[in-house]
Length: 383
Image (cartoon, rainbow, N blue to C red; front, side, top):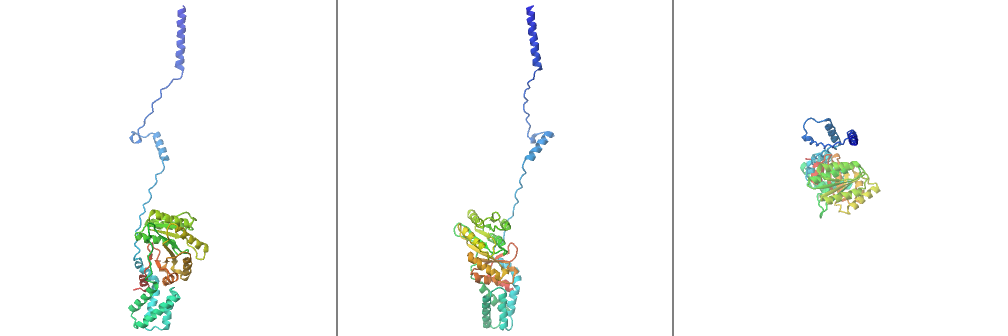
């Protein structure tokens, strides 16, 4: 009987334990991760989950940067012979001056009134009173010696006299070759409105056309447009441009431009300076500072003064003041196609003792030309 009770008790315990096991939480085996093939290897249509994931990926991906546009560099023509190519444009502006002189000298009789009229014509062309009187006296002597005067003789005589006054023997070459490893350095100065920044850009084109490498320094920091304009000129021909923010120290920009020119081993550095009134002492002193700072690295080989040919005598006053502050080595006469006063070439050279090296004859990119006395006089007198 006792054995029966014990067996019954064990059975009851077994039943209770089995019920607890059945009713308790079941442990589940972890499922192995599902490996998804790459998107390019999937078969069948994309599920909604796939599309959502793809959309998120595209949204998070940064947009691809467009490649920079390829700028095709321009090939400017060489500087030599430009004035001859632009002769017609120069002749149109100076035609009245030349024709008047030739007409007066071709008269059958040249009395005192005729010679006075010749002198007045030269003066109104901005040749200056002293030079006009000297040219008139020389012409009068030659006419008396020659006696007869055919149109050909008159033209040849007048051409010889004008070329002599302009100075055919002056050295008009730009100093683009520097000794040693450094580049030649040019500073371009002048008052506001003379076309100074444009001249820098065109000068860069002239030099590139002659096979030189160029750095343009935008040291006119008073006008943001000046740096933008210079950068446009440089981009077109592949010249490097050094610029800083508006209001930066001009001397610092000029210094950096020369430094980059030395490091890049270019041939020429052209420094554009801010336009300034010749009557403003502080601004003129600053111009001297720019030159001194530049010369801590390299000699300034050229200081080109840009003059507006249409300003006449006022331009001469500007020239004198600039020459006192910096050592002017050459003159650039701009807008010469817009005036009949070609005699200013003679007067500028007489006043400053430096040659006119370049002339601007229009607004085109290649309208800056090396000055050639004979080609200039030929254009004035016509065929």
